Length: 93
Image 1 (tube, rainbow, N blue to C red):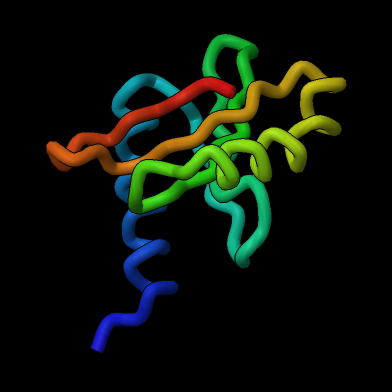
Image 2 (tube, helix red, strand yellow):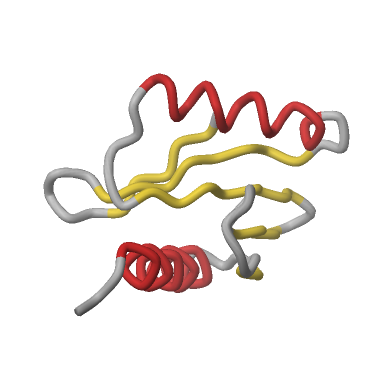
């Protein structure tokens, strides 16, 4: 039986590959903490929280709160999720 952790990890790798195809250098952060991925392209750094579902407003707010420290360093917080059509969506916060 596949656990939620395993499904989440698999989706993190899917988002990692998606960003790499967009030209980003991507590092996955092991463990259950923010951010799940760090993506870098042309000096722009994204801190990506990955969700397998469209995030609720409370999840978005939680990620924004966690990201406040990163903003001081010019790192852009993002949410990546799977939409209803099975496509990866990346939302800049």
